[in-house]
Image 1 (cartoon, rainbow, N blue to C red):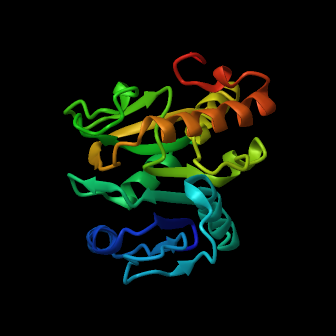
Image 2: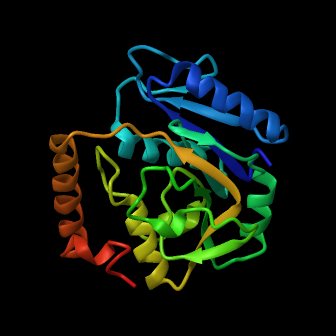
Amino acid sequence: MMDKVFCVILDYCGGSRTDKLFLKLSKWNPNFKIHILDNDSPSNKSNYITHQNKFNSGVGGGIVDCISLAKLNNSKYILFIANDILPVTRIDFQHLLEIIECNSDVIQISTSLTKNSDKKYYPWMYNRGNKDNRIVRHADLLCSLLRIDFIDSFGGFPKSRSGWGYDWEISYQAKLQRKKIVVCDYYRVKHLDEKKSTTVWNKKLEEVIEIYNKRYGDYRLIMPFNNY
């Protein structure tokens, strides 16, 4: 399992919160090694760091760094985990792996979200109360199993500090390549992201517009609201 799936938590100043997440996921999934990439935290470092960045690469750079580590491990999949999630139910990595292994057209499978998470623009990610696997237009990367060869198929993610647009690009490329994205209602997490100021939000939006206008001509092409 360790060779096939590279499980990694991207951490920045998560400290004890990241440690609790790591220990909980490890207890549930003893056959999987969970890595922690610390993105140059100046304080509140996790006690379970396995990989350390010398410089902070932002969320976007951190995601790309995690994928690079998975490729160095010759893994087929990456199970990416953000450090700002709180599992509400047990998460079974083996089950997620079995779903994607049995469905060659599925390129991403993500846990569902609680309705009090801050992803109000993506209501299709909210848990629907039934144990089911739903095909959706898009899923945030918060806790996702992804095919690495699919990410490579469109040249990988562009350089981005915020990482905004990465999940949109997956959705857009999945549509172009006739692949599927799945939200797994068997498992549910809460997103604990702190509210950002308008200034920070606008800066991230400016970045995604610049990057994806350059890549696709119009960033709105990849938005999950527009590409379906």
